[in-house]
Length: 393
Image 1 (cartoon, rainbow, N blue to C red):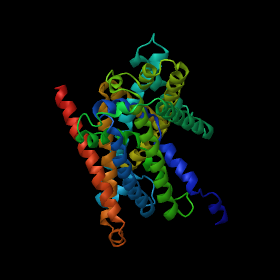
Image 2 (cartoon, helix red, strand yellow):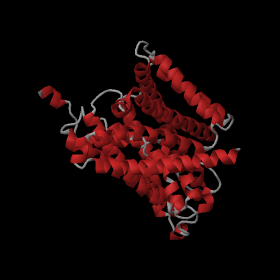
Image 3 (tube, rainbow, N blue to C red):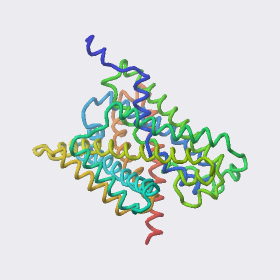
Image 4 (cartoon, rainbow, N blue to C red):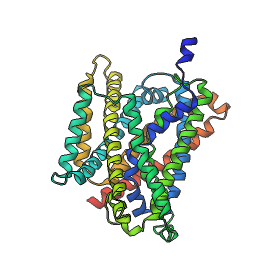
């Protein structure tokens, strides 16, 4: 027992794990979309998503406690829907991750093109994907030190941007506050949620956290609030310091900052390199995580046949390339990712509704709120998806 207690982590470490899982390169792809489609009122969308993510996280934490099995979404959804629903939930989550990585590969190509203008963005994005798939196939994974470097590289541009923008902001940039109407604030949640995916990783820490019933919900709350504040300040400070016309150009974040702060060349270059580092690190880690999820999913679906881990990496890489090559509209990436991953959350949370003790204890009040907010995000994601597909026809 003493040895088992010794390896338990506390609430502080669990909070950091949750923050590491959430803070990724996704936040850098959202500002232009939020500003163009919502305006300054986009910061309100972050408040809604923080609440939604918190209730969903608490529900997943309850599932991790009540269903301490490997397979997460498969195990959770199987409790009420059986094998088939379990596979749908797990498969939906995997597809969502693959689509998200397609977007990150496109971003990698764009950021690399600024450094290597002699090569096309699609070529650079493809080279990035092939290289990272190759590294995963030969077993190269980010070390603990590498993970720490990655989180520093991700947090640095966020904090640096907040400081510089707040020092050079103008209230005039905040008006009109909602030029596209308040309805677009809620619709923006389908984009905002992209930056919070990963919170579900912290919900499965029951086996390694000391006093998990108390500390896992606390760690989830702390990590979501901290990340929510960081994201809100990031988006808010950008809008506070930058006229809306800059965002209408469709340029990358570093280019927008370069226009706004023409004398801060070092700052813009540091932002570009840090964002690129975060993108590459996120893709690399997600390829590994997704390939392991595919191995587990294949084991559930075809118990007699074991999927080779290296082949799994290739399959995931092929899936990423498909989304990267076929989807050119950034909004489609946001909405498809949100739709598939939210479906996995919902199919999992439904299991709590079939547990009598959860109703008696009042825990399912949080579950119902979590499901309601998840359904709202799913609705707007599907609505946007239909609009994009209809306009393309």
